[in-house]
Length: 125
Image 1 (spheres, helix red, strand yellow):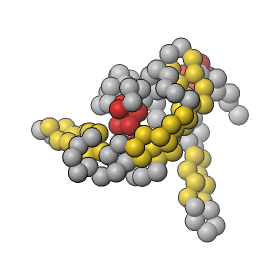
Image 2: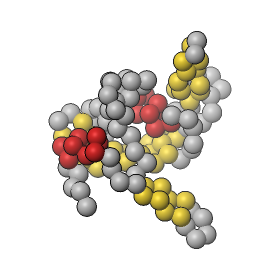
Image 3: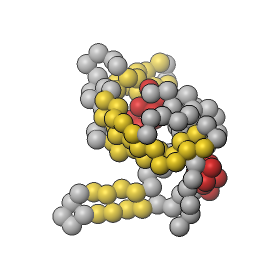
Image 4: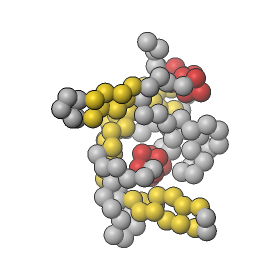
């Protein structure tokens, strides 16, 4: 994430799909937009960046990307929502589905993200 937000918080900001020609993106604050809620917490920070864990409470398209940008801290590499060019630094590292029994899926952190995470205090396991 570009910049460093507060240590934790909740973004409760409805999102609606806005189309311009063939391009589209999710826009916050649109009238009658569906609810969108995302909790976050800062896991580490360094060099003007933050390593942030997001926990979406709803499931809107591009929700985390649009919410991060809405609070002024877009995801690194997110050209659509203001995070600059390059490779998107967003990873669903761990998903837990509260089923019976629970289902857990984990993914390794890709190399293009590791170096920036290390600047923010990440230690490889």
